[in-house]
Length: 521
Figure 1 (cartoon, rainbow, N blue to C red):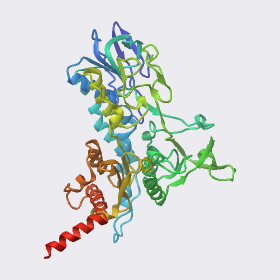
Figure 2 (figure 1 turned 135 degrees about the vertical axis):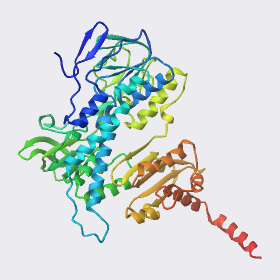
Figure 3 (figure 1 turned 90 degrees about the vertical axis):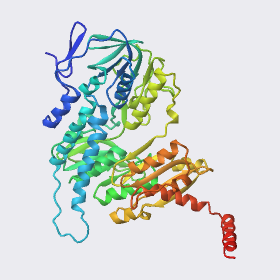
């Protein structure tokens, strides 16, 4: 009998005969599998023709499929692995559960002054079980039964285009008027000699750990690398974070990155920047990375050894094995499916959304793109991806959140900015987490063009500034918003207040002085 997701056919019906492998196969992961890839799932009989066929059951695919079905369309969804995609299974959901557990462990060891209790030792296995349990609890939201209950024909198996208007899955042909490619992405491997010959983890396997790595080497100091480095360190592991760039979070604000780097180092993470990793080798301790500094005249090689290696050095789109050529869809193995600003591929009846198109690889962006696809595919919409206001956040402690233009772009465009320190917020002082800042860039009318926040829950706080940008609001309008006191949310109001103070020019101040002199008469 075939295994590993193989299909057998009986007429036009295809039934999966095994579930994908998820380790460790405990009760929590079994609940996950039963929701996302039921072992007894039978694919439905195909309809004569579908309004929409969706390839990929991650965020973009689920929003497209359920959204279209809710509007009355006949929809088929094809998923070859696990419904929920990268976000639920290997990305946002398990990583944030892990960060939650790590934060709790860190807080327990760093109590307020005056306590003499012995700091508890982190329980790594319990933390990882927490991750699996939380993920399994969310899984039914994206599960096969729930999606089918929304009126979607759910097909589990390998889908492939055989014509510009037809996809096959398990021997069944699905003809469509419109289709969406939402197959997501996966961890990419940097070109390091010997890497494929040593054991390594990615975001797709790291959450399967049940024992704490003695010393974790992390390649890549972007959001994923920084989040997992801090979490693992807080759970008791030695951690070394490496990157060829001169700083961590190279796409984020430089000051924000510096604050986070100093925080990581203060917690015991060893940070190796501006290094080329020449090769990876097996070692008695586990794995050895041979390095050479990029910003030094000293060309000598040196090595760092660890028990485990985590590769977090970027992602690549899933475009292989789908017959895109037969559908007339252009793509690139690194950049993904080629789309225009309305997310149409080179086949005007096929759209693409999410990580497979290569830009802004965020769950919330996949959701927004999917909504644009529905408008453009069925309602003669002209929704453009470039018009979306897209925030992002790195969920370390402190969090780093951003929306709109960067500091460099603001400088190039001659825009002004206002900045406040996190210590200006009473709530931050009271909680002892007052290291951070908020900065906003604005145009001549005071309208917000971009912002960065470094603070606890910055990913939540950036929402108000994103709303202001979306509706072309000014900083002056933010200054008029009342927030509960004391709260971190006051950070937006204080940015508005700081902007209003810049409006008090010497000329305006003289006018006010004359007015008040008049009132004293």
